[in-house]
Image (spheres, rainbow over the protein chains, first blue to last red):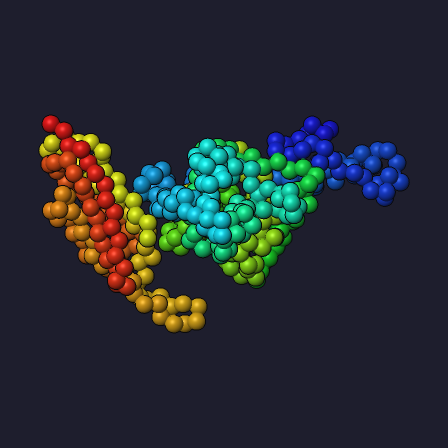
Length: 280
Length: 106
């Protein structure tokens, strides 16, 4: 039976659902039934087939993203490349002083994020890791979340994984972050009383006004959004969505957002990293 | 301010070449207000010029109708090897420049 709910990127052991003592008291046949039902409800869902947001975009947006010069997000990548070489902080070290050429050292890194930080056991996204490295290793003044500098560095690092499949692993260590993210994904919020799943899981591919609802993947972030006229993070996108359903927005870098990011990364398993993506 | 210039590294004499430039700039229209309700002053790149070995070959006057991070593309004749240099200035008086070189053969 376990074979039914094995999904790539998900540790099989971590997925076992243990019957509660209440279940154990019931006789064998209903126990199996209850067990099957619980297992079914616990199974996380991914849209099938998985489709990147770019597939739902118009021809002009697709052309803009595909052309590395016309893609305005590349300006942030370029800036990130310069910041990578720039010494900062007390030691006068740059990112390159330790990590060398990002083309090799950062290749594939973004596909594994968000990742548990072994020191603090805190779940960290790419932005969090860059901020931590800057503060603790370089001992430089912190970068503000959503500042152009942090977006540039994040875009530059994530860009090194472009074309590689998103590949986060859910195991016993980050399982509770994953479950918290999943709960947030399905929680109805705001005055419009909508959850993420109401649109992006149940109704993707349908129209919402002039837009086709995407599956809501994070594989192209940071993205250049024409509406923003700038590059923005996944957390900025979360905040726009929350404001759209008239829910309270959490601050940038909030732990709940990082949990949600982990759930989305699991949901986007196998989709290629597109950074910097372009969206309307 | 980051800018990117793209042109062919090598061209034949007399060939039509494509030149592209993208500049990171907010192109603030002057019609927007900040969260406190205060008007954000207009700040756009108002003039951009391109010189080919010192001779001006392209000039543009931009206004508040141009999107942020402007991207321009035009064509010219490859005449001689040398430098193609862009320079621009915005309403706040900030200047920027970017250059690229081309080798013309034949």
